[in-house]
Length: 60
Image (tube, rainbow, N blue to C red; front, side):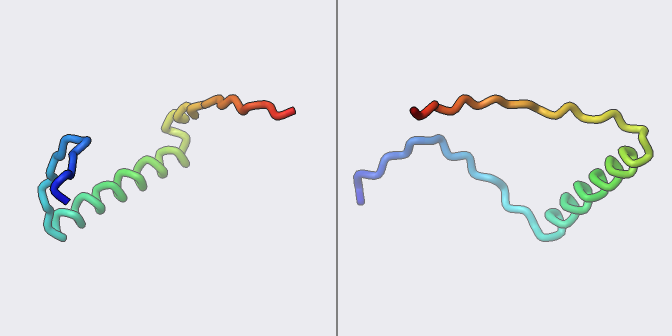
């Protein structure tokens, strides 16, 4: 067990309280609802859909 190697740099995150978590969650929900209402009203431009192409190997 003493031969442990770390392959990535660790970046500890600050612990948040339930109140802070709830405030950030509520803010995200509010922004989503606002964006959805603008989209339904036609006042928001449509976001471009990203297109990705994947090539599959052809089997004979």
